[in-house]
Amino acid sequence: MQHSQPTLGTLSTTSFNNILFFSSQELGPRLAAMLNFNLQQLCGPKCRDLKVENPEKYGFEPKKLLDQLTDIYLQLDCARFAKAIADDQVCTKVYRRYSHFICC
Image (cartoon, rainbow, N blue to C red):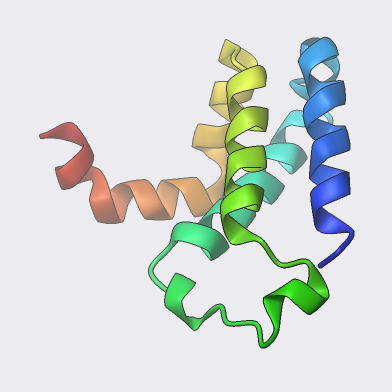
């Protein structure tokens, strides 16, 4: 857990300056899948099952992780990365389940 925040921080910093690289055909879908998976773990229907005893000991700060994930999504604001997000199976599954809330 302690390594996730610095890793996401580095990814956030580097993605800001390298949009084309992170939205490339080779990396974009993999990054989108990783981000969507982590977003689903933090905010999805089973997020209440995500419990850590002594979160301070392990550096587990879910709100901070969510903030970093959101920054990465926002920094990679381009059509190619948006398509990679939409094509990911996790995103498609979540969208189908909650589309009536999103679209109405």
